[in-house]
Amino acid sequence: MLGKWRPHLEYRQYVSRELGIRWPIYLQSIVHHKDGIKKLWLLDLDELRGELGPCYALTGRPAENQPELLRSLVMMVECREDSVDSWVERLRNDDILAIICGFLPGEIPGVGTYYDFLDRFWLASKPGKVKKFKRKPKKKLKAGEKLPPKHPEIVKMIVKYLLRGRKFEAGKDPAPDSKCGGSHPFG
Image 1 (cartoon, helix red, strand yellow):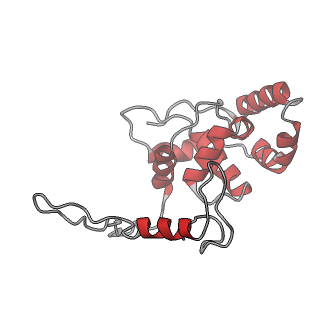
Image 2 (cartoon, rainbow, N blue to C red):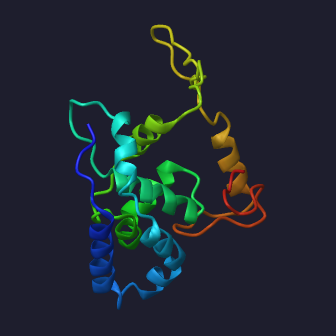
Image 3 (cartoon, rainbow, N blue to C red):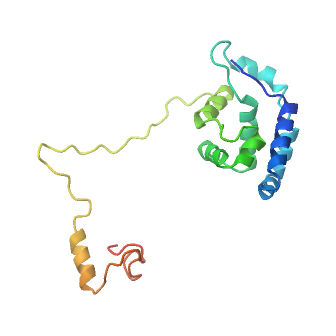
């Protein structure tokens, strides 16, 4: 069921009020997103409500934030973000972006909500079989058997390192002449 739909005028008032409050502190971020703000300011989604209604069931929990989700996807494209997961994380960490999309800071929908929203309007046929990621099968051990060591010759490498006259010092990187270019003494 399609839930409450925030009218465009109400969206504009919300963005004006919230950005006005934050203007002195977040001036640089607001100016950075000025093109996206202009697009969403002009993008009136009120007529779309009637078109989207048939995509939702008549019963069940009402869908929330539908115009905000659509504005958010427009802003995602504007910000050249190509991952919904990254976008949601970005919205959760950037109150200005959240406000521009129409969300209350701290009340950003989850990734699954975005995918559910997109699934409703996907016109192409869904892929038949999606290949699932398979983990490498774990080797099962017999009773009393131990796992083989991950680094079987680590002791030999430490001894060799110490015999070359090197010392371990807490908090310092090892010598730059090691195999890994200085990032690990045992390369």
